[in-house]
Image (tube, helix red, strand yellow):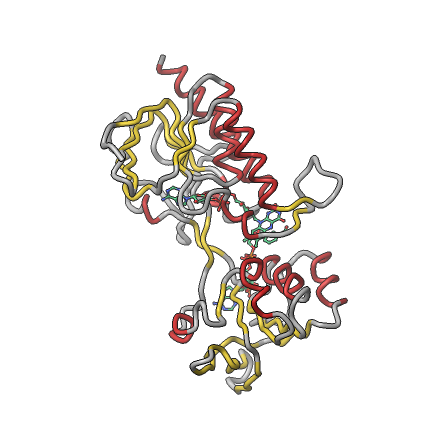
Length: 313
Ligand code: FAD
Ligand code: NAP
């Protein structure tokens, strides 16, 4: 790829619901946005199955279909989509500068950060050892490989419960392991989980070690969070669904963040600590982290960018 600058009034980093929605609004305001997609075009919804809570659809829809519609809509109204991954950002000068993995440099009079969040891992060594050989952070992607096998999943949020239920489509038994004695998943999700005869829950335990051999995962050693006692369970697959970390590495020391790394934005706004830079979606949302809230924040960011640009015109 050539090393020429690519300039726009609105540069958007990230192609989840936040980025696509920002692009739709910016394009319809004639701001000719450029959107850099990153390694995961479509974002987190690409790894989910049914979406039941995005308004506008009376029947269940598939996550990948939903974001594909968003992408097409953003393109149809005039967004330039660029397949690249931003590796460096200069927020000290204007226009703001973002360098892609390709070597291309993109400049924007305003910058909308919609880089979302990434799967969190437990951080135990055996997790790395068996990654791709029985350990996964994406049941939707890898569940099929464990057809008629016994698997376990760790976590107590919506992701863990949704993925546990998804795994019941393939697996003979699904054990959900949670470190406390109650789930934080929505009540309706919990009801479905407890109603499944393929699911059992082990409360008050953490995964201490993933056990395995040359064939891959064979079991887990679990440790009680109450009394340090341990127990082993036999499984062939292990899924990690303990949440996500905001993708803000690029902006460390450049933009204000909270203690968990989420971008700090002004109240009722997507404005970050630098005028003209906006944070939208999961990257700036510790609380809700939903497709609809991400899309809403994308809309807000584009409207705020537009207002900023007209105030400078
Ligand atoms: P993301 O969707 O995380 O997208 C981030 C984008 O940024 C990606 O395209 C990535 O490629 C890009 N990116 C990151 N770093 C860079 C970089 N350096 N350069 C360029 N691009 C970059 N929500 C619901 O409302 N309903 C559901 O049913 C639902 N199901 C879910 C199921 C699962 C398994 C998960 C994990 C989440 C689910 N959610 C659901 C939450 C929802 O997916 C997220 O809230 C939403 O996707 C956040 O959108 P986003 O645009 O902020 O970021
Ligand atoms: P989450 O809500 O942050 O839940 C993470 C879970 O993992 C918590 O139960 C937490 O335990 C546990 N956990 C964290 N670190 C752990 C560790 N080191 N060891 C063991 N357990 C650990 O994350 P999420 O479930 O991925 O959901 C993220 C967002 O996406 C949420 O806003 C959620 O509502 C949304 N989402 C929505 C849907 C849907 O609407 N259908 C589906 C999926 C996700 P504690 O409970 O003890 O903290």
